[in-house]
Image (cartoon, rainbow, N blue to C red; front, side):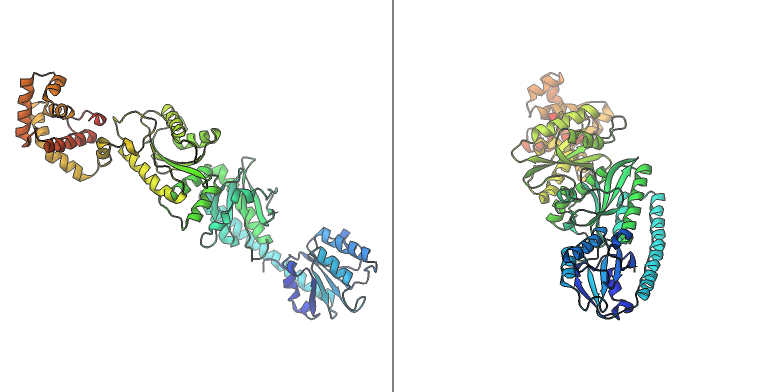
Length: 537
């Protein structure tokens, strides 16, 4: 056993022989017994340090109820594990004043109906405690070796937290200084309820200087530092129906917190950003088992969901950077300063995801426009900001993010210069640009325009540009001829050559539409004769 409790001691044969009966503190029998102390002193508390199981015959107990209550208070104040009174010498039964005092202080009171040899009790219990301490030392060495191994191979913080959860069998949460749950891991299947109202609950548990129980829920809390300064903390949540926190769990959490502190010195410290990225990707691909789990995970990172409009944004930035600052890093630093609640993380190597939480009554456009102008001013005009439809439910974010991705896919070179783009900005050129890798589009272009492009290549002509201007002018030959600087007669002759090569009647609206699509597709594909101006067609 990793540690000995009062209940464990009562089950030992040496104590069971005394027919023990719990007279008070029945719900406190899970207290850890650190040592056994036999005393017949009236004021034994001055010789105790806490965690002792006190054995007595009751001989020194005062008859005065007030003094007897003071005796119990002194034991409870020092934090003894329990009080065992042997009947037969001083008492034939436990005095009611003693039982009442112990009940009021939640101090376990065990009455032995038969006499036992206290020396045998102390020898037996102390041997078990020493064995448990030796086992704890051996276990500590194993745990230390495990976390050292993780540290040496540069493990991610998720692995440290998962290891702590597996070793303790309890949920473990890594949070930062503003009580955002950066990582949450359980020993078994994920338990979404762990993060219910997380920031509010977390603030009720102070941070001790080293691993210790804290707060009304009895959390085990250990600080995590970064270069000598407090970064956050590691928290273990004991199971409601399980045993209380023991020395082994405390040791494990302390080792894990130390390993995380070392990891911040030697590894990549952007743990908050990794957490945001993880949640955004889970929303994008909807990896959650329920809406509640998704809501709790997002809210644990400080994103309000209830009563807010959620606006997904996808930023396509390629490999742009401003010095050592990436787009994701820039947004993560700037948005909190502006008071905008958001999740910011990497969706891929070339894309950043942004999930804004705005008041429902407020307009989202000014916020997104400010973000877009700031990013384009910092990282360059080639950056694309695509915005999905605003939604009010977190479960709707997946579809909206997908639409933002499709918008980002469609915005190519030559698109109108705007701080952000929405679905209504997608016209024929943008649609074809998003399909640029589809071989069916490429085959269609070749079928419609291949002979014309080949003719221009062989003869050094520019019939493709002539056709493009004709289509731009919606079939108005006079306007098109003026644009290309040709006489109407020369222009008409070129059109007849185009009709002959393509086998199409340019007077036919259907044929012009087919050719319009093909020329637009060729331009966005960057083919021969393209002018990189798809937005003007």
